[in-house]
Length: 150
Image (cartoon, rainbow, N blue to C red; front, side, top):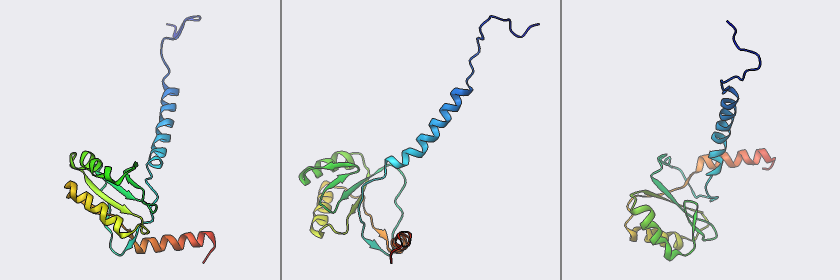
């Protein structure tokens, strides 16, 4: 019995190259995805005791940057008057937790105004994000030693 006759087509598909390409693409996407959702650059205030953020996706992040710009996750809120509508439709109606992170250079009055609008909407699950002072100090000293500065 002959395995294959000369001049006939092979009707079997070789899937090995396809699997190799798919595995390489999977690895590329697994490495690239965390880099795409880094978040906004905010210089957080420091404190001694900081809790770790929950990892579930049932929360949203409200960011107040140094220049006074307000973001709900990565989406900019152009007017502070619109903030209440966004908070009601995206956070309260979907029963999500809200975390507030504000740059340490933001005026206290703006942070209090934002928190007042959050409470006016009726959001009860509000967390405030800060940076651990011990972690920040060690990161700053590591950055200085890496650049060769004191």
